[in-house]
Length: 447
Image (cartoon, rainbow, N blue to C red; front, side, top):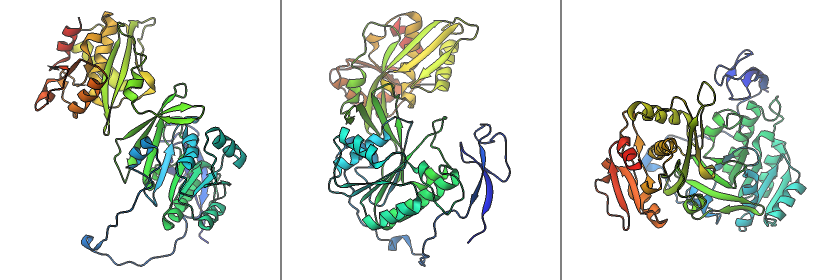
């Protein structure tokens, strides 16, 4: 047996140090270092001797994917689940990870699903499955947290799908540290990945997130996975966004939209229509933007409120939009457009719990702030698409035809877009498309 090695590991970000540190130099948190002893870096595997081969000699076989029947999930996974792949599903507590994993058994009736539950008893999982109408005999429940027992169960049952809920509760007798520690998570994930790949089974590992919103455990855990899925959304809203941040077998730009109900997760076929259903016309500080996630255009409402600050330092708060990006846009509006925002509290909200990360939403956010400051409705401007630069210019965006086509389906008659993106654009039936070069041109149309 190898000699145990002692290290101090940050339980927040996985940073390793030979000695204990009060403050982690990586994530900046205090009192997060724990002494751990580990025997190795992964399970022992039989050595395979293979000679190097030229790339042309490597055979590529078309492997059929397992389609779940859930269109939103299949799109994110790359048109189905790849056999032998390992997927990490992460998100905040109560966001819907266990619910979605439990529902897989109902959709994969032709497959054998081994559901390993480390946080709940088998009875609790069955009660949830009955509530979701997903209690089927093709799902094998196994309430266990010991890694060696789980590996034996996988080899004995040879399932098509393995679900581990959650990886932070699994421990191995070979690693001398507590369950959920960095060493345990790394060791257990590697062992599960190896045994499932050996039998060509697909594995789903449910993972917790830290208070900073990242996956708990070392970053190497994400590097080991074939696919990493994040559940996004506010627990107080019914809508959930499942986003692929890593996918070796498909696009990393796709998202799936679900709505949480008492009977489980329902797919949202037309999210743009749903997100705009409660938008009230004739109110200032409201605009509509279009963000493209992979192949899906998504129309959402951006709300802004600018009001006189009650304290010396004005507040800048954003929900669903990057706060630093908001500071950038406010600086452009004040410096380039002459808007007086130094004494204004500015709040920005993306309705429906959606998070916008694409620069094409910049113009809509900037106009929403100006609309609230002037107290003038921006309904007449229609759809707003464009990236805003430091000099106040409106820069071009991609997939403009896709954005305009989606807005036309929802009844929008006008769109304001970057003038540089109009080159080669085919006419959109029933829509008036206006090209602009600066934010000042849009604000002139507003007031």
